[in-house]
Amino acid sequence: MIDRLLTIPTNDEDIQRRGRTILSVALVLLGLVILASVAVIFRPDATPSLLGLLVAAVVIVASMALTHRGQVGLAAWVLVIMILGAAMVPIMIRREVTSALLYLTLPVVVAGVVLRPWQVWLVLCAGLLVVAYKALGDAAGPQSQPEPWVLLANSGMVLATLGVISFLSARIVVHAFAEVSASRRAAEAAAHQLEELNHSLEGRVAAQTSELRAAFAEVQAQANERQALLDKITSQRAVIREMSVPVLPLSADTLVMPLVGDIDGERMVAIQAEALAAIERSRAHTLLIDLTGVAVVDTYVAQGLLRTVQAASLLGTRSVLIGIRPEVAQAIVGLGIDVGDVKTAANLASALSSLS
Image (cartoon, rainbow, N blue to C red; front, side, top):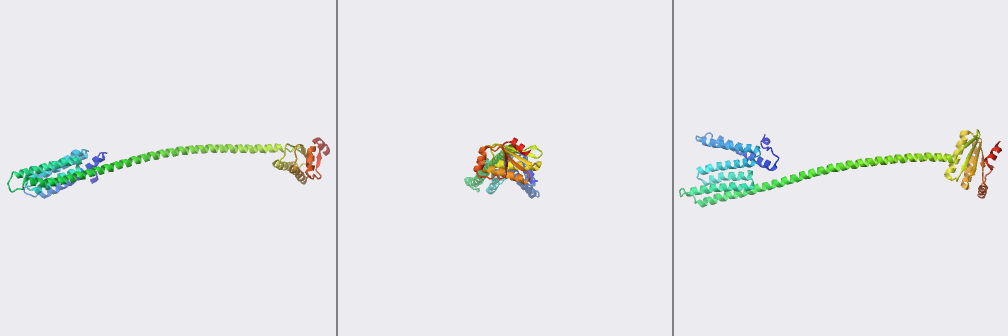
């Protein structure tokens, strides 16, 4: 309930602060008016006091209504003027200086709370004028009253001191609130900037992630293409190897292996494997190894050919080396390789005629 009464429908932080202050002071004053009404209601001459309290209550409620409408400056002046007027009533009726000081301090204190700092001086000047008027009025009265300058000096000193304190207090509050508001605005701006930076970073991260995914997909596609190419090359190498080591059937029990070009270690292993595999598949009795297209035969090749012949013999197949050229024969003899009982032929026709 109290929070709802102190709520000001505006986005201006300064108006909200001053409005809440005015409403708080107004509620306190309204409570004091109610207590004063209860105190004076049973007096014989209570009617004038009750009327004055009723007027004060109406003015307080009006200031609260103005504050809720956002007119805090007007509401503050209405409240201060009402308090100043209420303070002037006992001053004009009574003649005690103490009463004047007591009641004139209220508008100065309230002004320091609800008005702007520079407006406190206006209320202070109004109070000093009332004191001066009171002092001059007492000076024209009976001689038993204090001297006018003594009354003016004492009252003016108290009000001036209180006015300066109220002004400084109001100024400190305003400056502190301004610094807090500036700090909050700076924090909100920093938070907004941080949020924008965060969104920007999220966008950059998302874009970079998308780029990385696209790059990864491209690399993966290239890797797949390279793997397919490697598989194709491997398959082609296998075909080339088979073509480089052909084993051809001449008859149901005779195979011929024409060799062309240089023979290295890898090709020698392939020759042995293909020859033995073909013998196993065809169950051939004769294997003709044609060396007409082989230009160079070193120790490793010669020994490999002899091992192939021996392995074929173990499978029940006799082997014939065909087309050994003179320089190859000289090289084999020069290397000291024992060809044993290996059969040879000058060409394919003589090898076939020897088999018939």
